[in-house]
Length: 541
Image (cartoon, rainbow, N blue to C red):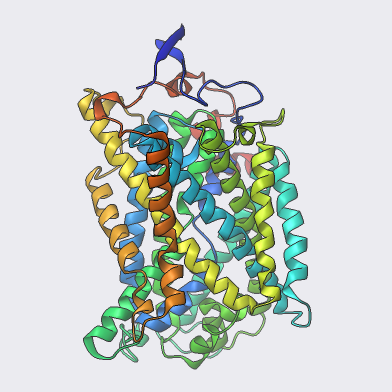
């Protein structure tokens, strides 16, 4: 446990500083809590809506059928919900500005925190060129004659500029991006539902007909019961990619005012995001598109554009001509928003690693506005990976990067869950009642154990297609490289620093809790009013 020096007393709780490297903060080595509540609210929604849902769900539907797709999204969605409630408990009680690696270091082992932080960094430096490549492919929907590299360069400059500015500028940009994403996703879900009821130009009311013909479950790779099992498992793996990034809002907690109130509010939104956008989304998709549709099979072979979206397939089947171009333009907002948040997350993770002495100390330096400029610069350098498609098919590169992002993302969930288990053990060992926590997740800690079981199974069997029908070295490396890097990093730091597992009785629950005693500002009153109530009040004026 860190040596704690009492500084002063405010509101019954000491202000504390730790002698551990990186804990003592100077004005030039600290983030600022300048995110506005409405920005955090929309940021939490934006993180839940990405290309994995609006595009990747089509491949899962074709492989497993609507039944497997729905079951998989429910199982993975439930696991992600518990990941978020686990994170919410820790972040509300012990606010930190070091992203997820900080909790792993404090609750489990510095070596585990080192591996977690770098794994999260790896995920987002890979995700950035992935989404930039997707942005370029979307433009090719209209201009196939232009090289994707041109658009990657243009969009890279755009997102880097946003991240160099004050965090409020990033928050405001993401706020409006999020509004567009919510409108688009809500619209396509409603359109698919209306189409399934016969409201399209073809007036064909499919309802749940496609669940009977061709059926609710599809065979994949093999035939018979094994084929149905592989079809379902393919949907499970794809669902992980679709949900990857939901936890990103947790990174903003380090720059969110009054985390005692704001963190629980943001976490509670997770349930509704998962239910409305994911569960209802794939349900109406299965009602509007049969899994054996030629248009759907053709879409899964397309690059990342409106042509690849199963929701557009539903629109085309119904005979609606105008919407594909509109959705393609909207997808550009999806990918640019994701690219921008990718740099944000990787830079804040790098900042957290530097604060804990697990990365060069210069990366913890910030500008006067609280922007960790050196961490942003390093994270931005990896946008050049998007130019790999100059020598290889851009869709192939996109597939490679997507596989890596999925594995890194699942490992991040596991790290949060393991940290939460240690967190709960620490509370029990130190006699801290749950009633002292600002937020207690429903069904916790049992939900954490469920989510850990699901994520562990997915990690182990994510590379099933590397062995069936024949062994493929390239696929095997892509599916398990992330695991190797995680274990390698943890082992290296364990040996290099001779770290020890943190005992439950020695977990530091003091450092950072002074944030909970900060006086509520005028801006924080927004949480009391509520986002939608504020909108109504403005219109009334």
